[in-house]
Image (cartoon, rainbow, N blue to C red; front, side, top):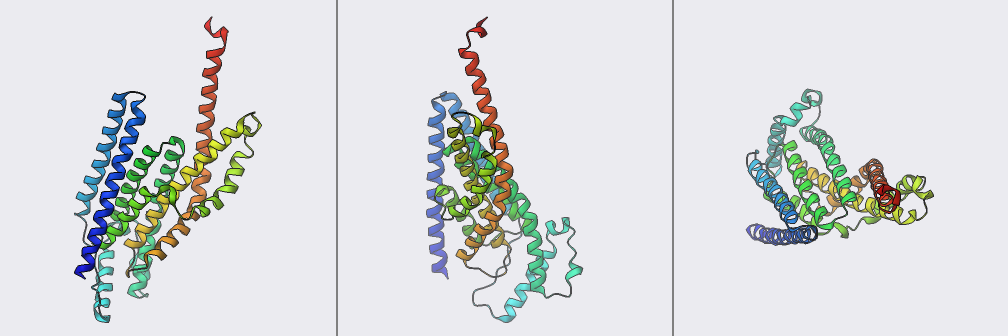
Length: 318
């Protein structure tokens, strides 16, 4: 057991170091890109983003330590120990402030077993948590689809994921075990490190193909000469935002599955089911967000065209 914990700490430390290196690299890339505009602007933006990220990390750790510790089931526990573990978990859930705020009526489920009551309560918490997860995914979709800046996108997604995970932990009102914390934040780290390497990209394309066709195919852009390049840019923007939105949904669902489970589940099963569940939620986010992206792009094109016409129109000088 001690040997397992030792190797878990080693792996966690390795991921932490890689993540820190990656974040530092993203900040440096962002600085170099902005320095072309003005060095002072680059310094100000990087310092502000660094302070925001540091603040989120500090607040998350501080508030996490204030939460009640998760009830853990010892390895090799017998039936009696498991029964007591279920009772303690139910007692803790009855004190959950989120469930109290949602006016969850425990009396309605008294006829059910304790495990069934816990399952229903966890589903209620998950339904509530999904509201925030979808909100964060929508924000990530719009931000990364419009910005098209790899370094800034990585920082934006990291801050959004940290904020979302912390809010979900508060919903469940529990300080996760060391193993679950490692699992949750490993998923966050992997999301940032492997944004473009997601293995389930085909699931996104299946959702996006009809949506992009319906949004762009019948738009006025298709009637404008030379609009193919604009349409391709829009499609790439939507794809970029969709990947990041799916990753956000995936991390949120995985986090809730870890926090809302009595028994340890298989990590691969959780991740695969989270991807499938996230893909189902992605369709509406793409549909709503794409309209905003198209509107922003059209405004940008109109503004650029108006400025160019004024620049080259000799009569604007008079």
